[in-house]
Amino acid sequence: MGTNELERRRWNDEQWTEVWPKRERMTDTVTPILLDAAAPAPGERVLDVGCGGGRTSLAAAALVGPDGAVVGADISTPLVALARERAARAGCANVTFHAVDMQTDTVDGGPFDVAISQFGVMFFDEPATAFANIRSQLRSEGRLAFVCWQAAERNPWFFAPALAAFLPPPPPPPPGKSPTGPFALADIEQTSAMLRAAGFERIGAITHEATVEVPPDAVVDEGQLVFMGIADERIDEAAAAVSRYMQQFAAGPTALRLPLAYQVFTATRG
Image (cartoon, rainbow, N blue to C red):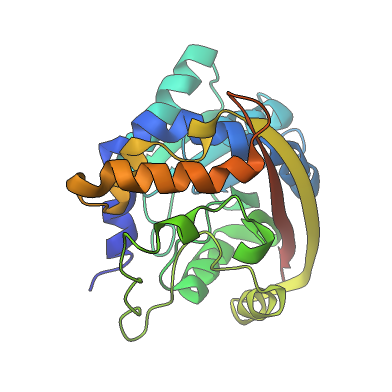
């Protein structure tokens, strides 16, 4: 199996471009906290790993100003196209986007002063290789800051339990590969050890909790169920099961109030 083959297929499905803005309504709440941890300064060069639709990249671009630069990198060609459209509409000239795999690829614009990622580093099937590659593109004493989820049990909004009867359990990863997914970096000690092995120093992790109020389709909709592999003849049944599960978070007829548990890692290239 090639590098990140499963995630490459997943994130290059055009379906993601259509639903991505809905998902951002839940995750954008962490952007100020991530940027505060990364502290990009005027004139600095920033690498945004797993930039998605580019909203975090654009926020960082405002902080580094016209003398700085931001490079957004993502494995998803459709999401990179969305990010470029947003940058063009905003007239943001100090940000560029590249469809690359940051597990192995090098991007133009380095060495970078800081690398950031908002829920984008949990999808490497060789995470130690990926973090070493990111480190190699930072200057000496360059900084890393990323947000990832705490454990699934701390994030009950994750609706996978409702789909247990509709999807088989995921197969184990092939030899030499690691499991990927939203909670792949939840264990602070394991992730810190991985960062140390990749050559990072002064590693820290701070846990955060927040509550957001979003429309139900910010978390899941029928298109996502199809994308996850629910059989067509069971879509209605699965959607009903998810709807029942998500009722525990109802904040009125058109909103969910979700408890989010995430963590911010910081580290420095020695």
